[in-house]
Image (cartoon, rainbow, N blue to C red; front, side, top):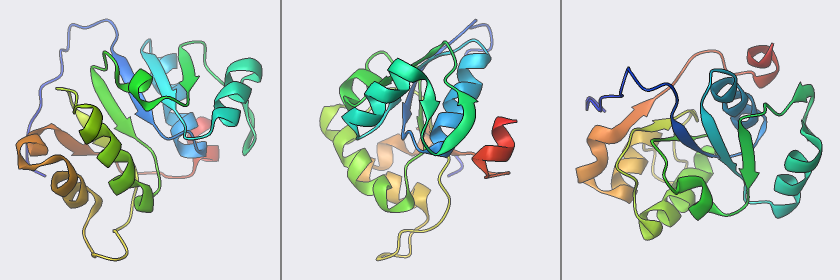
Length: 157
């Protein structure tokens, strides 16, 4: 994953399509919004999207409120529309099917940041390798990974 995809350091904010609204995704989406970015957070669950937009609290991350700059949707096209960066926060088992949908819709020409850890169980591939396999070699330069502390409860504080 040695590709380089330059970000615009002069941009005041970016529109971020965030895929995955579990506790980790919710936490990082909030962090991006609190730093001035517009975030469209995608979840497969229409019920969770409605709850987060209406009440702002995640059912599995009590005490952490949704940041003002986060909008939640259950429509993946909405999350990807106009994205200047795509961030992933689904399970390792979800990488292939979610990015299969991204490929069908059309891969945005922007950085794609993986935040999930692990390997794909049935292939033994690292998640970045799965993403290249799904999206195609031509998208390798767009893919990066974020690693480090991984407990949403701690990071949210």
